[in-house]
Image (cartoon, rainbow, N blue to C red; front, side, top):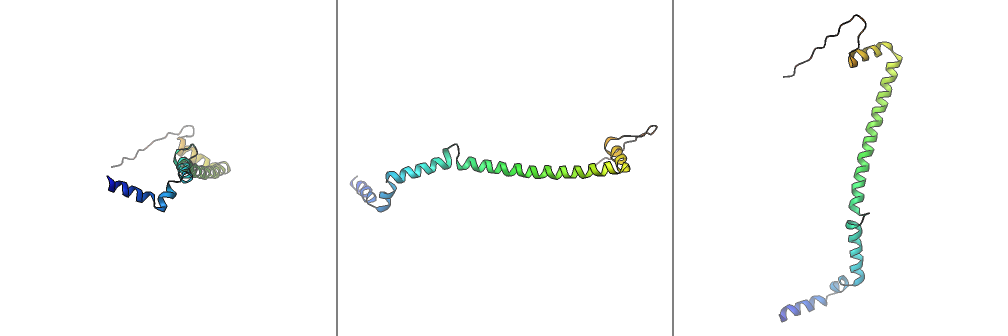
Length: 109
């Protein structure tokens, strides 16, 4: 028991133990741990929110590209009646009066 007590006393006399056991150092370390991991505004929550923001920005870019593609297609359809008729026949299976439509399904093997 005396050996253990001597080792503990020797550790207490080292410089790093004196610094680490200082109440201001302990308070600062506690504060940093609290702010990084436990607080409502912690680093982990900010990281999750930044990831979500990045995903939302990517979806914004995707939808902006889709909007520009659709605007281009709309411009083509309104400017050329033949393209409008082709689009209506292919996408919505529209037909002229007196015509019949036959749908052929391809079988994948």
